[in-house]
Image (cartoon, rainbow, N blue to C red; front, side, top):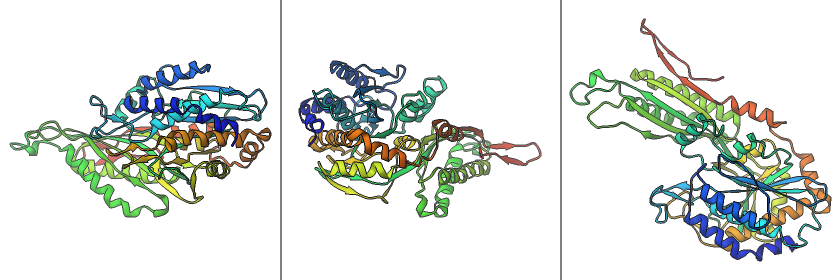
Length: 448
């Protein structure tokens, strides 16, 4: 075992303490100020100089070996979910780490501490960038849109926002490890997972007395209900191999029961395995939204935002992670297995060779009210050891393996500029239905 990997064990207590802090102080995306301060203070105590995002949580720091080589980015997420029925959810906000990001933050700190141990960098070259990132869970869209309108952020996801801010300039390879409900002592490496578009739909009708004069109203809720049924009818048109997932919720369905709802808000993701199939499915959904609003005589505003790109793991990084993980944990490995969730690591993978393995150590249902961290040794300490071992295998022997991986990598987008040009084309605010004096109706629902 390399001395960097062994050094992680020396900081087991520090890792456990960090896990306890994050579990007891859950914060959702772009609100992780307590977590940011905890990690920033701990990193500074270890002697690190930080580049902080400033108006949002998060930071990075560089570990320079003093020998030329690639830059490897290692990330840890800080945000929580909302699940107010969880017994340990924050009673005021409903926030809880039923996603396992608390383990990532703790492992990142453990890795940072291990990298400060004497002699651990002697056989390594290049630069290691450690990054605490906000806002992976794509929730509270109204809040994030408010931040966007205020000019604080441009993108809903923390990693793509950091890419936009230049925090990943100069990076050659990237990885992170997520905790999951796999058995203790185990890890998982798969090919990747879906990307998504984030969608907000606002229906405008006409209020009227629901019992006395409903004929004078236009029911925005019924327009939304028709849309839900239309989306269900579309499902059989999606190919299984494209892994399309659409799961809308109504976040505002009316104000009082005796008034026809004139304002209804729907929120959804359009998930899929490629950007092309996501855009095609989104076009069908937008058509359904417009047609259902028109059927009721309602107005409708469609607000599409870039969610996350598909997470396509680089094969070289997958095999590296397998080699590193097998020395520490029982490893499940598949070059074909595909997940239908989403992560903004997908945006990173569009430009850099990247991988996002999982380690066990949690129990319950992910994102559910019975999710707990049951095995800190796997979920946090084991995670930090695997990450340390990945760094060793990338940066030893003059970074021969890192350079080989980078040379073989075929990015989806050749440059960061090409990537942003593509996802910026997703932004759309469109009044999708127009009513004309001659009785005709015009629908407009596409950026294509």
